[in-house]
Length: 461
Image 1: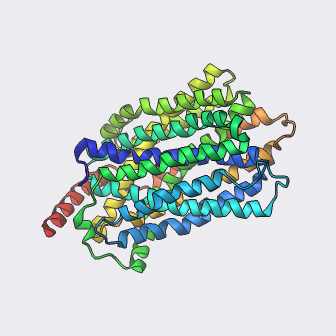
Image 2: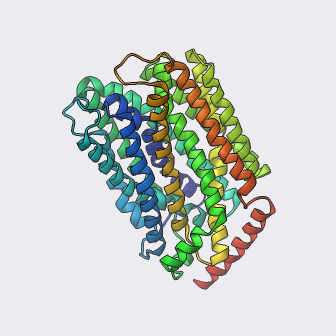
Image 3: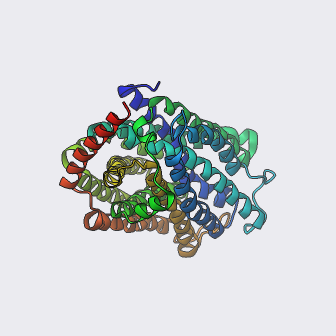
């Protein structure tokens, strides 16, 4: 039996430690690891990100989501995937950060064998991640229906997301320092990766105690794959939401990817200062969750997401003028505070899109929808992966272990802010002009979904 009430929401929310922690660590440190530590060519690293996180996830995530919708077991539709995927995540996470290099960086930055190795490691990890995270996401709008419940669950998820983010952005650099003396620079990344990877997997497994899948949805006859694909891809709410979702992930991913370079090369700080600044960023997010939740409940998703996105963009302008550690810590906190509003609005809006589909089709298909959403979210890593060498190599002219170009400092600052402006503008245009689930449309949708679920519950009694 699953835990009920607020306790169940809290335990379910524990999965965010693994979800956000794994994403934050990969987005913040994997390119840095490949380029600065392994000495892999920056453009080849960007191509790996494009193939592993863009092309592969466009195939992988929708397939896993559709299969989970069609699965019928005594454990439910989603839990079997999580039971298998979570332990396997740890294995492939280790392989990503423990390439067989003999303890030394690459002699040839354009090594073909390393390109193949890291691509396959990422592909394997992403498949097991999809099995786990996608199904964990998919139970959220199924189990909790009302705006009050969903915003509360999102708050708990984001509180634990801060914990996962803190482990990734604050604890992980400390672990690297601790283990570097014993295992060497490359070895420290492998050992630290195993430790945090075990936490990611454990959080998903424990989170399964916090929810019970609803029998009325599992008893429905699944829609044919062809018909489901047709209806999904013609849904305007889905593809306009996916643009919004992608831009938010690009915003956060770009900040995470640039922070190690910015703090190291522009500010001249080390891992300790990096931990302080990123820790304040996590604290800012944590401190403002309840503030943004009140804004969401009183003003709705469009106002909340629009305001918090503009605030995030404004906070990145501080990167143009920050030079001291106190200033950098303020920058981290302010950026984190605006992130909280984007996260709450974005995640509750996911449930609206799934609800609308169920009202139209009569069948609950979270897996299919979250499959496409997660696929698009991972494209953000490919976008960031390509923007990084574009900024570092093409625009700035940076080469690891070579003298820094004169434009390094200001190039990083302008790049952090400029790319963020592009992402936020695209988000706002799509949100205000094209996204259809606004105002009274959402209120009417809530009434229809409650009536439909009551009818379905009666059928299985």
